[in-house]
Length: 335
Image (tube, rainbow, N blue to C red; front, top):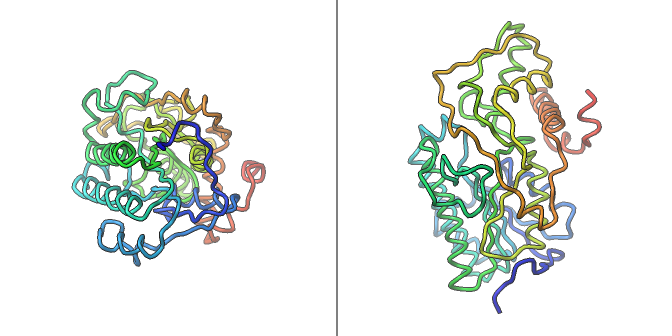
């Protein structure tokens, strides 16, 4: 019998593999799954390189996880995507192909592939509906990554069609929060701004440069909210159509910079480097399908940035990340 939409799926008692458990997304999934009665399975990349088909197939044959969250990926901001183009397309296609095939070969009960909102055409109508995929040209700066993610989504869809596999896909919007990469040039925008404004405040700088014109609009989701949505969908959703995961609200990069500056406590000037690329003019997900499935984000952008900055400061001070994550939201936003 083929799976049907909204068929309840029992996680309790299952072995659950989080691929990419050390990344921002995977770590958030691990934190969320700690609240479920599951047997969590992870493996370090030094032991199993997910780009290595033989290693992946061997590990799956030995471990046979029942449920898979495929969150492993090579990720980065505009500069990383645009300069490491070969690595982004090769690594991400290899990871998706190896894990999805291994899950199928070893009888996995359910798999969730985590795509990305960058799979949508650059000029697709806003807000972005799930059926907009492959309806127009992609944003050139991250095209290799987007193509790899589209391939993963289509693989899950094809295995579902041909084999009846209960494989589903989700497309999270721009994420931020604990575990983010704070590299000054290769990070995502929220992380980059947090680091830039923090270092400017510490150094007593009078101004901070923000890349681009400041006019593009972006949607941002706190990573722990994303993990909660994924677990909800794993339990309740089973259909070939992918599901957007976001807040349904967006903000200009210029206003985001002001919000981050306020959270950090930077009181200098903000200037725009218009020689830097903007990327897609606007990216807002249509989350009506997710809302109908009974989930909505609970962390506001203001609250989430305060949480993220608190974690960033604690990490810079040398505290263990595990210590940070026991801080509840109320504690994090009062400092």
